[in-house]
Image 1 (cartoon, rainbow over the protein chains, first blue to last red):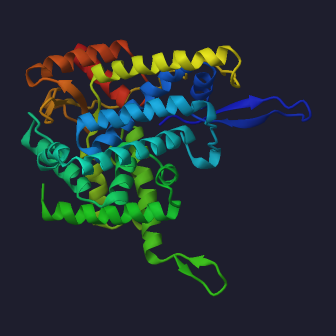
Image 2 (cartoon, each protein chain N blue to C red):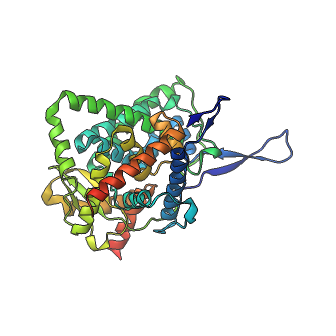
Image 3 (cartoon, rainbow over the protein chains, first blue to last red):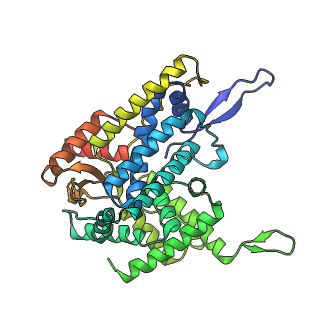
Length: 208
Length: 183
């Protein structure tokens, strides 16, 4: 994970320059706010993360693509109102842009899930994905391991599942996950701890 | 957390366990970022064995997904079109303009090799890379690929991505695959 950059900022009223925190995404965000065509850099950077989150949640790649598209279009449309607020205390590589983007993604995914519930025929794809999410032409061992991991995740209830996906797939910090899910850091830590216990029991019941 | 008579809160044992687990996960991801499989953690700072095993398996086996390059480019084109529409009012002075501070940061290194797979039109997932090289967690490429075209699409994707560098762990993984194939 990239370290947050620090830049020196001259202060004419003080003898020594102070160090101001420069967030990992700040320059990209500012560039995109000045010229929306430069949003592409943020898009390329976070496309796979947003798509992964959507695919785990929706279990259908067409639905995941739709949620991903809505997320980035909404992010570009509202970028002028976004303000980067990550601080050094937020940890290495922290980005409030990523938290903001995933909040948008979470809403887009929730909207797709509501549509899935209203149109039950689309859940057939999801059922297939749950029943056999990995039809790999690879070694049986690797296939089984990946399948077991995905199935253990998909059997978890809502926020536990989301917290583990954000932690293990998108490698977000606890603080970032708290921002995305709208919970306290302590609550997210407990969510993840309980989710890991559930996964441990699940994997125990289905040995590799 | 349990309320105290003075209005504060003390940590329950589960809060403490959750904190230990959180620190443990941080150390795992930090080790992976360094290219190490195992994180050195003091015995008294480790969570229970079952939690450690679950965390290790998820960190190793849970796939990451990537949409098809066809979808990626189509959405990039839509965003550019939208950006052009947004840019016009900006140029006319309709909204505040924040000055850019420079070019994006350069690419900062390579991850370990990760295999690539794809989601076909039938919704099933197939590995595209050489399974004997399957070290680390899978990166799965999804989208509108027919079953027959999967392996070709994988090679095309890798070649295409190699010409379109991006930052991030997943992008680094894809470039590492390309390097391995070229070697």
